[in-house]
Length: 337
Image (tube, rainbow, N blue to C red; front, side, top):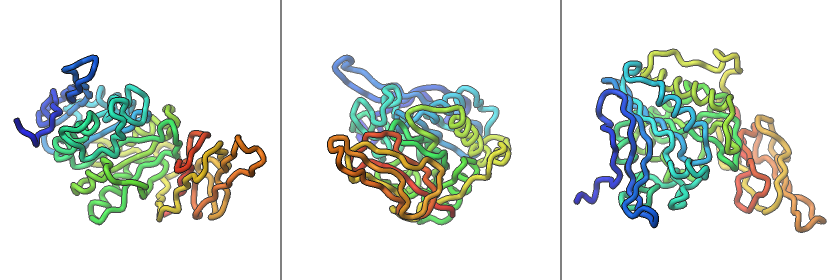
């Protein structure tokens, strides 16, 4: 028995030319199925030499633009229409997507804090381990599609991270710009350990992320932004023979190049109560401006606690929930680059 190989297996050959629909088979022994498994859908489309792109959605199970756009792409993209390879996983945390929850209902794991995974771990850790060991080594570029889920809302943005390798970072930045989201953001993560993003970047590969909408739903606009962005990336890396479609091509303002210089860009609650949003997404703020306030229903005489912007900029993310607790995300401010 090989104790280094993943326990997960694939029903398709990821190195074979052509278009192949299949599953990752993740062992999952449980009360109602002693020899059971989770079958996670995957598609590989390969045609000779060229770049290899991994496209993932459903890293969190309550974020829907990625699964919708990638299911549609998996049905329509054919091997004869590409150069290189496209690997599509519309629901990376498949149990969470089926459950409509951010975390897996099987093991309670946040898939985007599970990398590099573990071969003998829980279902989520085994998925992450297989992706890390068998799929990421094949990829030149990874696009992981997110939105705000049930608890957050974002102005649609694509993003890259500031990393030590300047050449790879610049290629990631150009790929982000090619995606063509309304906002193109150099993103500072609150907690990067265990993320798919971090593993890709530490392998010296190009990573592009995005946050498209939120609220635990999708809209025609957010799905269209995602679909166009995916095809723009495929075109940018010459996997498909198309010209990227810019915001201007769609009659929209040019993408806003923004960044988050430091942690002052985040607003985090120090109180538990009912949160009132005082400004909405895409509104400009000055340092010290009131962004929202927390009310206390159990003490009607108590004045609300006001949360203010820590810097000048634009509110591009906010909580989607009204009942907030200590430590909850309230808002995110970015500045023009």
